[in-house]
Image 1 (cartoon, helix red, strand yellow):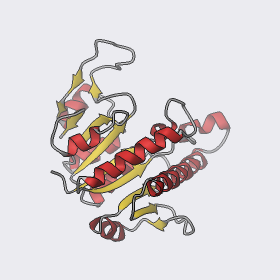
Image 2 (tube, helix red, strand yellow):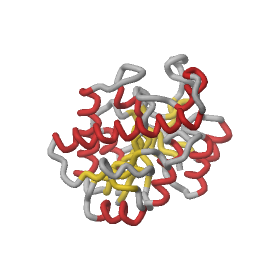
Image 3 (cartoon, rainbow, N blue to C red):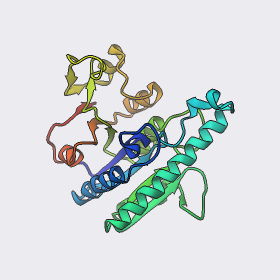
Image 4 (cartoon, one colour):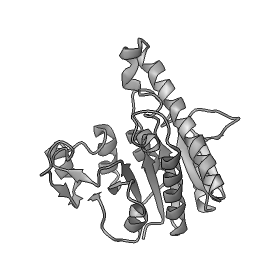
Length: 235
């Protein structure tokens, strides 16, 4: 049983079936899953993405500088985190803390590692937004970075409609094989796109277990915490 975990939620998870925007039903589902995770007794931090609002790699399309595009993306993570905080509160969750890597004092606390640890130890759900406050990274790297900084026992990598890591894109190849377990070396040698390479190497260097699973299936995350195999474990 893990004592502390970090859950990585993409912006796409909040958008639901759409490429961009927000889905109220999906937000309720995600909030319910987060509440269920804490109910197991584990300490829960959540890194929230912002791809449903804006992606930094669209800078050229919009005719803006990449750094500005990434700044917009970071603000998108704040919007998603505030939405999630609001839905968690509406569902009766207490002790929800939102911390941002960029200071937004009227909405959230600044991310301070020791303060985040204190919140977790007191049983709060800690939502982490703005990535790590730097451009040129997706939320893959900050999710691993925060997990390592906070001494998490594992990173739960929530996917949408994909129940693990496959040897090929299952949407394009119906006969693609799903892996129940992989080592870091196997992922690198096979060139499997689990997450950004820099993030994956950081996880490997700190021996951080990664659970890749489908957040669309209710209860899968809590199943993982109870020790029942689900999705793909990388360690």
